[in-house]
Image (cartoon, rainbow, N blue to C red; front, side):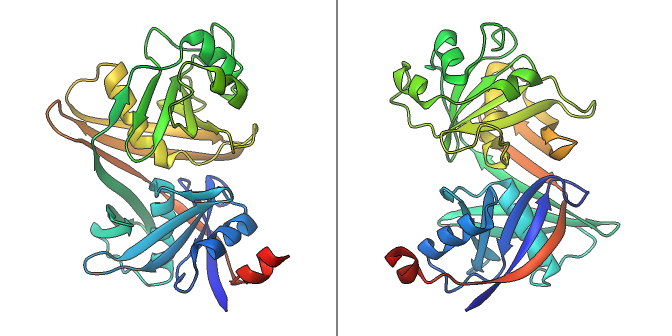
Length: 310
């Protein structure tokens, strides 16, 4: 059976920029093994499979990287919304439209709006972050990340373990140069004092940015991420926001940030983040931006028995 797919460049207004995400708008009939094989074939950092929703949920999403299934993040939601609107599966008027997507039992609130022909998508969520201050010391972090003694920020922010849906080690660095010199060393991690903590990915960031309009530059590292790769950071944004609230002493109220991933010359993404911090309430976060449809085609559903028999 053939399945239609679209390629969407996310968090950019320019084709062939931002983060490329594959989307299958009608994935009914595919099982997890088939979706994993397709994600490997598409070879994007995320491939989104859309299934019919139930009740008030417009669509059920499953997201796979070439290495395995992932938690739905803002990149997946923005790519899915752009594809469904293009396929006329999700009508949007000029005014704001609120829809719901889901992943398993988790429901996501998504705000869509049309502005001069552009679709703007925001993923809105409330999270209760779990924060752990017990992290590897700086000497261990230098070995884990392959960095020097002056690369890790210790005055304006601090390293934290933060978990919303998935756990991240969030490490502030002093420069973009350090962000791109950083390499995740699994052997050094296994020797560190925090080796027993189940963290699959590390988010490194700096307040030095390429653009004057952005506030932070972010990059994801991990055991299964190539040294020269800069995958989407959307799923880590709630944890990142929580780390800023915790380590930088942000006042209660509404805050707006612009975040960048990658460089303008190499598929940069720009994300707008709004969040509301209150000492006695959940952290409310909105992550939004543009997306551009750049390709579409069909793919045959893989024969799992034949694939694994070979």
